[in-house]
Length: 247
Image 1 (cartoon, rainbow, N blue to C red):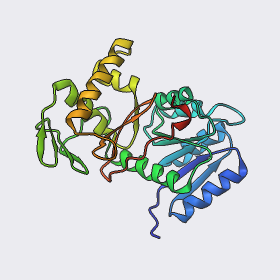
Image 2 (cartoon, one colour):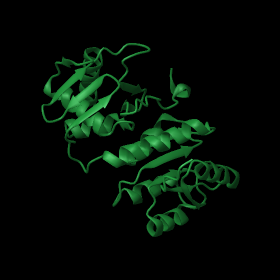
Image 3 (cartoon, one colour):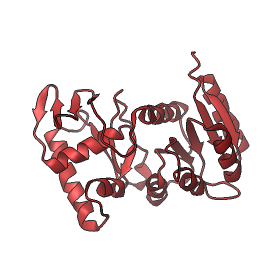
């Protein structure tokens, strides 16, 4: 397998899990850096500038959320949380702080590597707060940013200005779960309950116009209780495992 030379920092205090992830990464051509505490993780991050961080939250010295908060003060390096915490609130807090994804333990090796690849893809073409240029495509969906037009299977989909802004924002972060609060801030600039309701109404209209239905045309996935995820350009549409939180 070719060596992609990506450096991945693993911050995990359980030695057996840490060793397993290190071996998994190196088998897949990544360079693995290992830290067992939050402090050690921040030190290695500063000295090695990794391309991605896999982060446990239950660390012995400090909560892993502190690492996310500290890194996000200066860097947009992708962070994939890997944690035994399964509540909705834990996931929302990590994602709102800036984590790119959240995988719960126990985890499948294929799923973890897919999330790593997706986070690295997002980081390659994401922009620093500005809308992208050119076009975005995923399966039959195409977004032309210059013309502010959306197409499905070559047919233009008529969206309102707000609906388009939501779709464009999600596509800019394709493959990453965007929380309700993050979308509301980007589109309306506030986080009141009324705006969250407006988001849900607009999203229902968007999904209907895009032809979403069970089993197909699901370009935008609803991560129940957390937010929305636009599938990425490779068609990755695997949602977070929220089965335990569904009612």
